[in-house]
Every structure is written in C-alpha cells, then in structure tokens.
Image: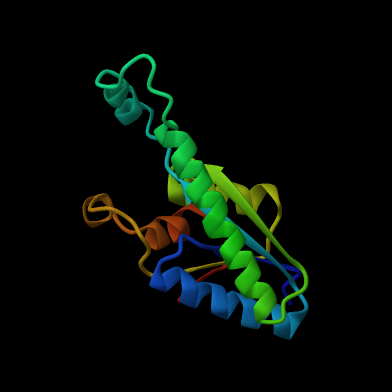
Length: 147
C-alpha cells in the first residue's frame, strides 16, 4: 500500500496529531516514515535587523536560529516516532515556502503519502492566502491525508 509516508511537522498540536497518524499508518503498512520540518527564510527581515545591530554583534543570524529550531523540532519528532515503535524513520529540515517545500520534497523523494495537520504554526498570512494543508492539496498529485 504505502512504502514511504511523509509527515510534515512543525511542533504544533495539529502536526503532533498528524505525526501520530502517520506513525500508525507506517506501523500498519511497514512503510518508512519520513519527517519534514520546514522553516521560512527571512532575509529581508534579517537585513533590516542588521541595520540596528552593531558590526561587532556576534549574535546568531535569524536564519541560523530558525534552522536550529527546525532541526531540534525534527529530531524531537523522530524521537517520538521511535517511542511509538517506528524503526524506519528519518527526519529532515528544509528552508522555503511551507507548502511548496513539502510538495517538492515529497516529489523528489517519490514518497507515497503526505500527512499533515489541518492547522499548524502558520502566521496570519494563512488567513489571507489559505492554509498550508489547502495549498499542499492543490499543488500535488500525491495522496494527502489532513489530520
């Protein structure tokens, strides 16, 4: 049925439910569980912040902080999947627009199913442009399960 299942995970309540369902399906089918955490690149914002930081300011860039947070979030999800009994599990992070990044990752890896929460940690942008889950369904031919 499924050889590989993608769980999009951002640490939100919805993504935790999606991860649990993806793990359940992976357990039932013997599929590999692939976890993806997407972070947004904020170079324009970072550029404006750099104007107010001193030249000797050694603080981490906003992109680095977001990448580190995404890495920790993905690793927590992987550990939780293992606690749920899933042995074939891997976790990845990618930067970019959430829906397009999820779809391109799933397509590149030829994954069989995308599982994601109906609501994540999205911003008010979601109210204007539509939710990530809605965008994913409109951008792919891969089956999508929204939890």
